[in-house]
Amino acid sequence: MPPRMNKVALTVGRRGSGKTTQTLKVLSVYQGLYERNFIFDTINHEDYRQYPIISPEMIPAIKKGTVRVMVNQISFPSIMAIIKEHCRNCGLIYEDAGKYITETIDIQFRNVLLDTKQRNVDALILFHGFGDVPSKLYRDVDMLTIFKTNDSPQTYKYKIPQFESVYKLHLEVMKSPVKWEHRTLMIN
Image (cartoon, rainbow, N blue to C red; front, top):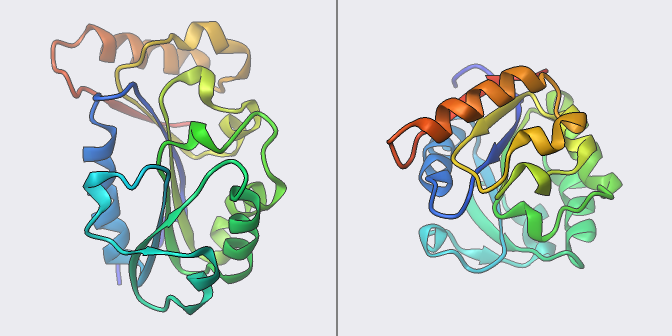
């Protein structure tokens, strides 16, 4: 088994910027690390349809494989309570997280993130812009991947750690002629 990572990764990028393509690569790494991987999906995303959808109640029964759990703002807290209780040695992907993770971060979700090392968990959280990311979440992540966005980190500099580095990388990404350009920064 490859070495443990136990990282909380945040990805920011507008629609069509390459986030899902990169996420599938990360998922492939997670599948090499963990027997169980959970994708929290909001729209039955076509790029994840090869993975079965399960109900939240089935999470404890999953012993092996990659599955999807459909999530929305109402169901998210109860799903995170199940994950907190039953997820060890697994990968978590929060697709289109701005639809269900708000500025008032659910305590169960925050506990899942804060306990990644103790539970041997990696998490990837995807948002469409810097402004969609809750302030506390910036403080809880280990790395930030920046794709092209429709907003600027400068507008949210008060809540972004290592702002100068983030701003510099964002400028590099935005100036690149490559459509799917992205950069990653370790921030904690």
